Length: 167
Image (cartoon, rainbow, N blue to C red; front, side, top):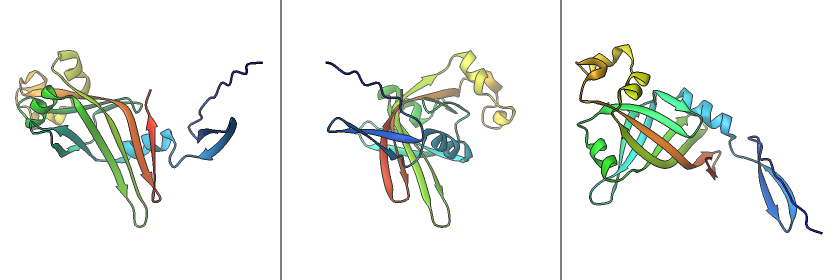
């Protein structure tokens, strides 16, 4: 007789199958905790790949918009080095961390970065103070949006790391 096993993964725990037995172990960080960590940060780090295939990391303000752990939107200059790098190679990662007095927590997400210049997306994340950087406002040709789409991640907490997929 064939047995079909359907497993629902709760954000509170990770499921491990071993020798056809189901074991539950606590995750280092559940997805809701990762989202809260990201939302609390004022700075994020984005990584692109240069022409010589070396990673380039840049500190940025936090994402303007986040949809779960799947999509992140950043504003930047169309003329920037990063935009050129992402157009040549869309492989990217973003990183967030919090350093407390004792505890250090971080999360890296891997995926693809798109450079968007359509007016709807630019309007979506535009903020009033952006005219400081983009003198012509939301229509400034040097204003664009970076959209990061995550495929997987890795978190770090309490001297432990854990990889996870993002659907």
